[in-house]
Length: 209
Image 1: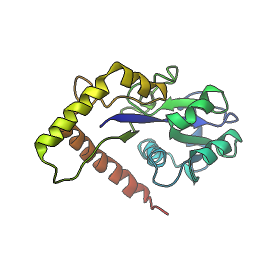
Image 2: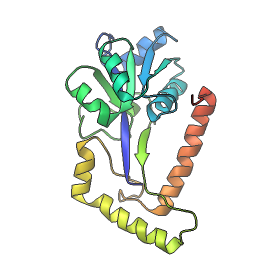
Image 3: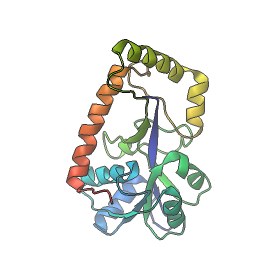
Image 4: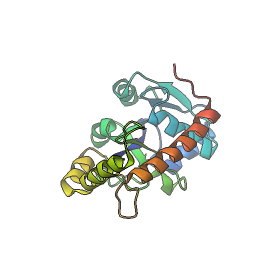
């Protein structure tokens, strides 16, 4: 695992909420009415929002778009109530005040939006991030995998690399107690992600169109 990229929960500026607690309270009072935009069906922001609905018992209305750009355009125009998106694409819209950032979905705050809380502050144990890693064919010898893994781990620990990630909202892997990554830890992480999101997708009956 090389990088995790948090999502960010945003509200249209017309929505009368300033915090996650206020947003969830409004959504409970308007059960099944609050619309949310994402970059598309089955994307990380989509299943992240489905998870939020499942753990809070709130029904949201999904409005999928063909990518982040169209979704953010409609959120700025206040034609959807809220949106969920990866930080890199949403960052300028939040910074410029065109949409209202409410929280990030990672376990720790984002360095590029340090004033925003994590969603878990309001919804305990909530965590969801997009992530990127390096994989190889199953027939590659284990010693080679371990060697490549060690080299990648060293790279992810370099201050310049971490600063570059932080610049666009990315976070280091953090799979080991020291904050690094190993092949075994990545394999366990993938298995856990499959279990977690398979259940979310099953309950939500998500179907890719």
